[in-house]
Image (cartoon, rainbow, N blue to C red; front, side, top):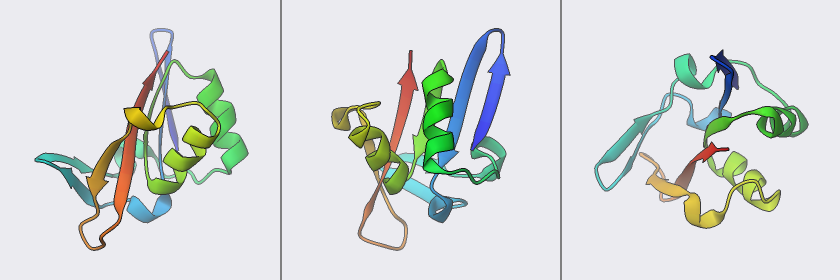
Length: 99
């Protein structure tokens, strides 16, 4: 997880650790998940949820994190972009939250 604060805004960028450094694709939309943007700090679900509650926006990617935020009703499942995993048949969720 990484927190970026600028001009009164607070962005939380977070991803599942198993998607770091992958390039994910959905109909030509490619996202490279890197630690420069999403951060190197590993946090618990509670720490992540606490930071998400305090943010003005969030950029999250990964099956686990997306399912957690849907379960907690922080994001709606219709707001998730599902991207193809480069090596597996599973899809990886990506969402942007703006308050």
